[in-house]
Image (cartoon, one colour):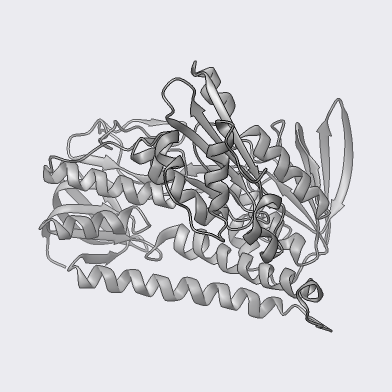
Length: 466
């Protein structure tokens, strides 16, 4: 393949990389993507999308099990795990092909191989150890994503001890399961397997599950998980894993004592580490700290003409954050005047367990630690007509305001479909909305979104339905 020149070469075709390339093409820049595995990256192929397909199957199963409460008699419901997994993989495959179509539509060149910096303004591509091409590029965006973090002594083996990849394509339903880590990934898998009948134990080293969420929401979620039969151990560590023929014995330690539990499978969900290896960063100004590339507010590294986005540059590890960073990075390169740096406090986070959890902005504790005087509003799902009609009366909407200015500092939710509702508060955060703006907004009835309004009203002593 002859040497080719591009305005922008993106190394990595995940949700950050392919979006950056398409935006570059829209702005008239000649763009290319180098991807070594699958377009769409981990998110589309092994993360966000296929896990949601699995969780949708679990949700349907849960509804069928409670069909009698909706007036239906359903008997002999069986789980076909193979079909559940096949559907998930089919969804991922369809969307990966869709990304390829979008790149072709926007005239973005795609190269199958591993990309790395090969000198100032140069990118080399190799496949199976063989050099394929060398490109010249005025700008290079590193978007290589991240992989599952492992811990000494707890290394996954793909059979008894799984990462998210093995958990997504289980050959059989384990009767018992230990999930190490209670962040979004761990909780979503715990929810999926528990709903389908597995006995699930969760171990979290910190003092609460879903530790990045507001403490009140974490506590509510924990009660819901325990009601479902999950066993949760917080402030607890896994000291060792003994791998037997078909089971694993885990030694746990917490509260000044230790004990063993035996399970069929273990899922490790203890965070991620950036894919910084073999990118040609040596002898460049690119700095790596704690497994992630260091960038400034414009996603620039310490090397002129080299940028980094997405999971590679650190938390929050969210696909929509990566995509937005890709757009900011490219628009800055293109010289657009209206470009604004990304404010991570305006990025909504979602966990698709049952019940769902979603949030944006500061938690109540974080707001107070920053010196704000706060007003807090709450509204329970049980006070909402649509939630009761759906058979989903368990949940909570919480809002946090600056008592002096009325600015919405944060919003936190747990319950049915809150991952869809949170965007309303995300828009309010972006527009720097106040309690007055939200109070004067008319919310449709009957909807779950009415709880958002009531929570705002409650913060100011004006709630109607509680």
